[in-house]
Every structure is written in C-alpha cells, then in structure tokens.
Image 1 (cartoon, one colour):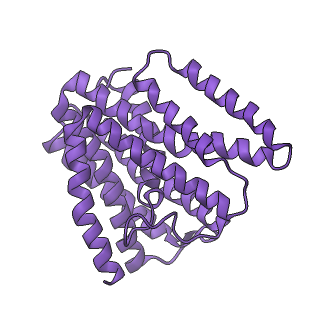
Image 2 (tube, rainbow, N blue to C red):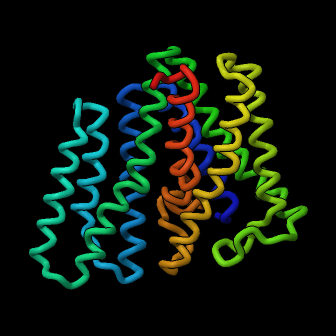
Length: 273
C-alpha cells in the first residue's frame, strides 16, 4: 500500500474514533487523552534514548500519569511534587554519570507533551459544566479543525506559492507563504464555527482562537521538528501508518491546548476560570 493510501486509511479509521470519544466526553475523553499523552511521552523518551540520552522510561511515565490525577483528586499538585522528588532521589542509585539527562528528560517529557495535553480535559469538562455537553463537543472540535485546516492550508499554499523559507534549519519545506495560508484558513474555520455552531463566541473570541490554532499551533509543529532533527529521526514513531507517531500527529495540539485553555478561562465565561 502506498504512503498516501496509508494516510487515508488511518484517517478514515482515526477521525471517527476521535470524534466519537470527544462526543462521549466524561471518562471516555479522559482515558483517550491520557493514552495519547503517555503515548506521545513514550515516543519522545525513545527519541532521546536513540540520541544517546540516559532516560528512565518507567519513572518518566509515572510522573506523566500522576499529572492527570489533578482532574480526579483535589489538591493533587502537592502529591505530584512528592513523586518528582522521589524520582530525583532514586536517580542517586545510578550514580552521578548522566544524572542531568535522567532527571531533565523525566521532568521535561512529563510537562511536554503530557501536562500540555491534559488541558484538553480542562476545556472539555469546564465547557460541559458551563455550556453543556454539546457545546463542549463543538469547542473541542473547533480546536481540532483549526489544527487540521492550518496543516492543510499551509501544505497546499506552500506547495503552490511557497518561495520564502520560514525556518530552513528546522523544517526546510516550510515557507512564509504556507504559514500565512494556514493562518487564513484557520480564520475561515473559526468564522464558520462562530456563525453556525458556537454562537456564544464573539468575533474577538473567534479571531483569537484562530490565531492560536493557526499561528501558535504551527510553532508546536516546528518545536517537534526541531527535536526530531536533533535526535536524528524522521518520525517520532510508527504507530499511525502514513502519519508517523502519536507525537507527529498531535504536535500542534500539544502547544495549542494550554493556550486555548488560558484564553477561554481568563477572557470568556465558556469554561469558567
């Protein structure tokens, strides 16, 4: 099967599954985001290991999973600190060699991508409480569509009109024209959602969310590309045929989710503060 057909087949199965879990909400959505986050974390740890880093995968995943308990156990943040401190102490057993790699990789990979992605749960659950489950679904779908539209707009605009490189040392194929095309399509998508599905959004809200999904999301893609280039790998994994790994598919969303949450919680009443 060609690479293009693999991409189509994976999308044909994956997109309805993702939308179904977003629609189900509650613990189904919680479990889905937890699996995605830990899968992305594992891939990032494996990339660092291939680059020669001394990593502790089990401990790192434990820290990542503990971050999700903040949605379940009140005032759980203090307990996360205990887990991190225990992790640091246990690294003494392996001696001083590469201890900075073990500790920094464990803590960093728990923040990116796990903690960042966990804000999707804050958005969904918060919007469900404030606006109802249907509006929560449309709000998450807006974020996903902004990411997908930006990727498509950037790809086709860059392929057709791209001449000026955006970040050649990180991603040689990205251009300023493609970046702008992705951003424009994101604004179109946000306007369509505001007019038809999310009337609680103001035009300012729609514009800011489009800018976050279409602009800040592309920075997330570049961030992951820089890591892959540094580690000498083409894809973060092979779980998704035609798409690479989980981290490859959710890199833009990882950066966008916390920014999306901050805006919605601080500047609107759609998910509360």
